[in-house]
Image (cartoon, rainbow, N blue to C red):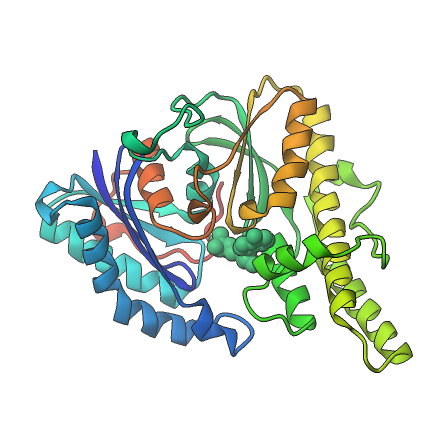
Length: 349
Ligand code: KG4
């Protein structure tokens, strides 16, 4: 099944061609640099840029895959969650493309697409022995992105149970906000990762969120963010030149450590206490690109006999349309295109 997929949920204009779970092309035109001067995403700017870029991105996705509109069997589009006016651009374009190709339009939940993204596969000539083709259920799934932090039990494709969810900020959002406090630019997660790798995580002290309260099965990052702000301010009061380069590395390492330890503790607690025959652990979302987080989660999986699975390339962690096409193949919902609309606050369940 050849699917043209589109995602304009936030600040990436994305289109892709997939064949079942195989990614034929995956074009992402990021607007991050354009939003950086505002320290975060400006919805009206995002909408305008999606409108300007969507045609080019779709053309490029078709060309890179060596496909024409007539080769498409379905169009898939992210309808939510995301920024309402940004989602609208992709949904309208997808309707237009589905009409042009005379094929069904499949609405996709962005979080579900991240959740199933480890099931994407490269083209056969790029596959190696590590590229697994078979999905095993039940499985645990963790999505860590700029807008979501959610831990799920997948009993099968489309059959999910939320095990824990953030009650305030998402992990990526917290990393972005912490990086902004240090004037490191937007989005801050990847910059923080590089800085943290050079830092000493014991140079400062920050509380791990909800320590000892893992049985509440929630994630929370707003308290950590406030503690981080207070830590920076108290150090500045002592030393007007704070932070030095080394201080910045150490602060990044300390924040990242507290944030990741929280994830580890909640996830470990749930895996330990849940009666589940899950054999796989899927990790998706922008923060899934982080090597340190992967290392820590891989260790948990090893301890509990779970197979750790991430998307086969990091480009499939951050927002992209290939995961939307893969999700549409695995869990298609054929709905009258007239009834399909953006749904910015939609939940996974
Ligand atoms: O999945 P994504 O592109 O967008 C959403 O669906 O929200 O995730 C974006 C988030 C941003 O917060 C960004 O800072 C974070 O992913 N991120 C990272 C890394 N790369 C991107 N966080 C930590 N380490 C990284 N290497």
